[in-house]
Image 1 (cartoon, rainbow, N blue to C red):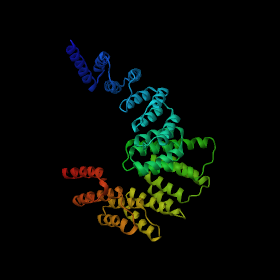
Image 2: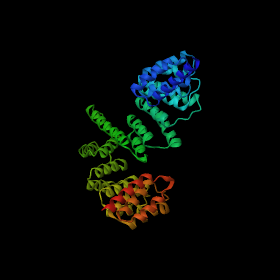
Image 3: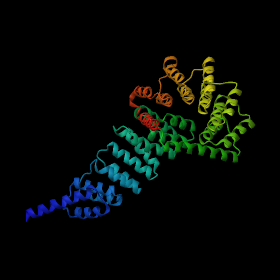
Image 4: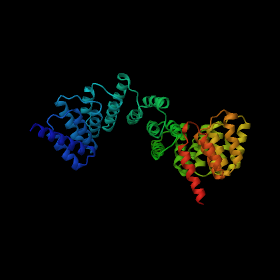
Length: 424
């Protein structure tokens, strides 16, 4: 009898493990039945069952089972807590989450992260920031990507700009900017009204996905809507407001709204200095009105490096290769030092004009004459130029010279173009 009972218990345990490995709703029903027949389930069995329930989004059952686990005087471990906090967060049980969190003997990075995210999902953003503060002051865990993204969501909701800036510094110093962290920062800055900072982060994201673009566009749309409300309330705006608006219109391709803002600038005596002038050049160029961009540039009494860069890139963008290179030469003659963005414009102009020798010369002069280390975008421009000219072997050699293994996307794009060229 003893052996028969032992064999039955083993069979029940085997069934339970099979049902929990790939749980569907049917399997889960049987798994719960088997679980209920296990006389004294240990922590391992509880954890397997909790994981299976969490996988099928049976969050109320997760919390119910967790309470039973503690009633059986078992101590949850770091495997148990993440699933429990996920259930708490999805159900909006913030008070339960705080209670469980405070009872934990040890907290690893996953537990901190799930707790912060749980509060964010419950829209208890202040509590999320308190947990983040506690993590920094009460533990040795260092925030990871999941930590900073959840915390930035809370900063965005509460418009906590200073904390957001601290996290920005931490990301750049410790984690590195990517599409996920970059999107969270763009959202935060845009919501806090810092469109310039949002655009700066956006421009520095190495490879932007559709979410990053959407966040930036939404920031600009909100800015235009705010300007309309300012007009309704007859609030007089300054040059910083119109620059933000012009930048937004440029990104949205909203030419008519941009022209109206240009008219507003003239009518209200706002000086077209280097900042406002550069924004106007960029607006008209991105809306395809390159003649207007050139007219603004020629009418400016003062021009700085950003202004010259803007017109060079504008001409390159609109296929005016000769004029772009002519102004680049003039820029150096008047003593304005080009930066890495200027060279993107110059190399793009060479690519549009098929100027292979010129592209090579300008690329090499970046480091040699200006002390600028080529970035991925510069390599991409020259590779595109070489590919267009049919110099595929030279392009492949250049890809191999890209440092730090950052050439994966360029390799995929290049080989795609090579296949298309060969098929033609």
